[in-house]
Image 1 (cartoon, rainbow, N blue to C red):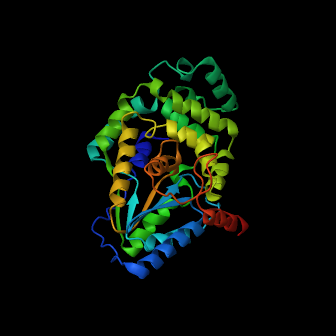
Image 2: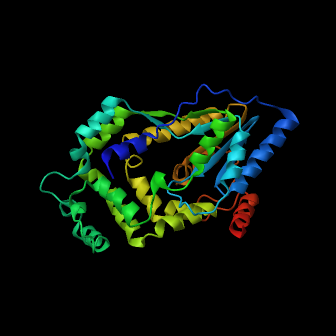
Image 3: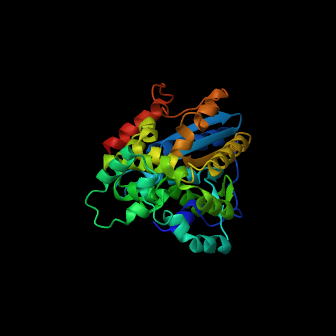
Length: 338
């Protein structure tokens, strides 16, 4: 994977939609009926979602994953229809990159993409992990993987050995909701931004040892094989949220840059926390689409909302916890039977 492609993917550059008018908000029985429509449609799509209400504010959180196989059957049109009935929509962060940032990546491509001269993965991995890597890579005719930076090696293992397609897969929940917002001209905004120079600096300055958790988790995902990504996506569609969070690919993504970066990751989480706090005092229906792990991981957004006393309605997000909404289970059963 080329450095420029990794950076552009992380920036998640999208068309600015700040100037698009919001739908007129309604109140009373009409608002309640519209809220019911939004929730029913979103649940019927098969995407994991949770609702939280306070007064006249309702927050719908949709858990998204990337790397959905193109032939995986779910109901994106229902999610698109639900998004089109919302008052405002929150998206993940976008990167703000300048030409100088991109040129810096190109200029330092060798530093970012390769290990220091004369070194291989064996200089960083323990003998046990290097042995597991050798087993995964047996039969590879091209031995360039030995000299790739550990970060890039990790992403390559997820893609080539575990079947993870990333942004090149089928439409995920973020794609669907973004399209709905654009078509319905709903107020939509990212929960925050990350400066391009910060992203580039984290790529260039991070020592190779910082990427050891990433490559080790990627090796574990590669050992599962090319079905790892499909199993994760099928768990997502069936609302088996704890299984998605515990999947080898999700574990690897959590360890790899940018979510594994000690400087960037806390910034991303804090921006989501602030955006959700604002949504809970904004009248009407706010739909937020966020990485599923950010919502459902231990100590994540859903745990925080629950700890504050909110009634979080949706599928089970932690292993061993009771279901909070029977309709979510019915939606999963309906989707599997369709």
